[in-house]
Image (cartoon, rainbow, N blue to C red; front, side, top):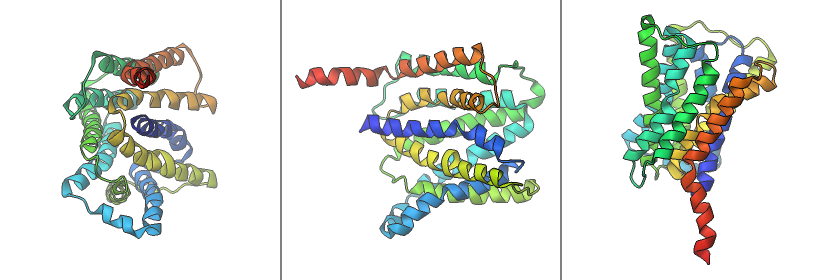
Length: 295
């Protein structure tokens, strides 16, 4: 059960790895408008399930703390991320924001029934180093003039890691509520768009397909899979494995001709993969020990 849930959670990481490709292909739609459209699309699968099975609507009746956590997690993360990119260079802001997998691994020590081992932290740090090689391939230079952007990126990392850890505490809450989180995030993103941006719609059918792909997978199904994974799977392994997202994203860009393969990517692959395997030691040991216990 735990292995299955962890694998489902990992599908979210796989879907997030297509985020850069779909975003690059989606045209020039501004970020909050894109967020509003994509989260509206992302809520459609959940709405279909609720329409086909109206009895599940009762599962949406949850305490205020559940709704506050979910909406703050999804909308708060994206609001802070976009704010960071507007106020700091993308490379540095992205690196700071991508501290969230490490924060999940370290923060998991506060969760009931979880024990933080040295190899969990070592695996997450290896993944962070691999991400640094990918994202910072052209050099990294932190400038105090972008303090607001760096601060927003740091809060962004804490927001998503906090959301993921708190979601684990709401393990009895149905994943159906993610539909409501997506709808609320779409509405709040729309308000931000109307107040901060100029509307730009996709110019071609291809761009519309990319936007739909974003909404259905990286900004849609991925959040349902992540919710189920962190509630029922191994959150420490998922945290360390999350560093696979920027690596896989880069490999996908290479495959489609948007980037070139080099030693940095190869070494990053070794670091991220090795870090994930290191962090997953407990799961491997359980798989090995099960047949012995049966005898």
